Length: 369
Image 1 (cartoon, rainbow, N blue to C red):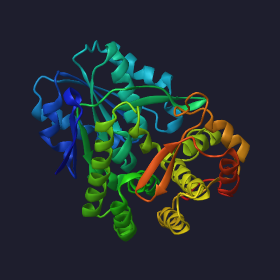
Image 2 (cartoon, one colour; image 1 turned 30 degrees about the horizontal axis):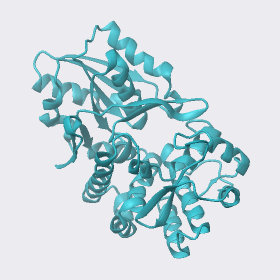
Image 3 (cartoon, helix red, strand yellow; image 1 turned 90 degrees about the vertical axis):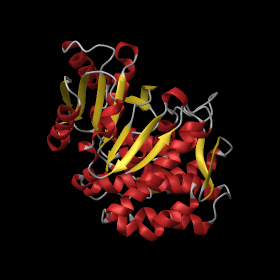
Image 4 (tube, one colour; image 1 turned 90 degrees about the horizontal axis):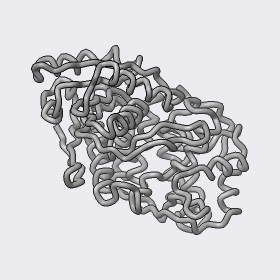
């Protein structure tokens, strides 16, 4: 088992990475109470909920376990669905010593984490991410949120989990499209701060696509280590943590414009990273060879390297205006100085951005399944 530590003082916690962890008693030590609410969805629950319940029954005597199953999909990442969790907690008279277990992908983790942040002004939760994207990104770092119809992740809070338990065996049941979407966040770490890892991905992509256990554990551990270091230095995104949003401003505009769920989050981020790389090249930061390496790796992973042509440049620019990184009315973007080095900047000309938005579009109704 690999263990990565997120060092945040009294809010520090471990990330456990290995196959078979749902049954491992190591995570039980992070439960401080005896009331446990498993938050999952209608897809993941039938696959893995019984495993968590079995581990609790074996290793935590007298534990009161309840569960709530949410509908599956980004379109259900709303305040109304989050309220279903709060209702279940209240109906079962759960107190401030309770713990939520978020069993599922990024949507489940975000909603459950936000419910934990809000319920009685904050209760414990553990992340049990079952998608690649969640294991390398959304389950780590304490960002919790739900969407608003006008913008993604606009209602949320920072609330760190007690532990993250990444059972890599759960990735075996992950649909191919979702697995490939998760690779976008893995590639992101190579682009923003780890050029050596990007080189490794170029040489080992096929092993990852086969879901080779050793390759998966290495890629997930390296990704989590990168994120843990960034989060430890900037827990609440006052500075350097914003680099983790490479491609996200473009990607969130795509998700909002198409309607939540039309593209997976990782697919939209992949297109957004390609667009950020294109703009970086137009500004003279990123060389042509590096730009093509980025596009090539995304295409080898069967990820979009452009926005859908159904969204025109003006629409994308308008949607990008609803972004948490806007300060004093100016749009800030994460761009690439080179592979392995990123920067947050508002120092770009509007015509260059519009050229990227105009040219980086493709006639793609939806990524291949």
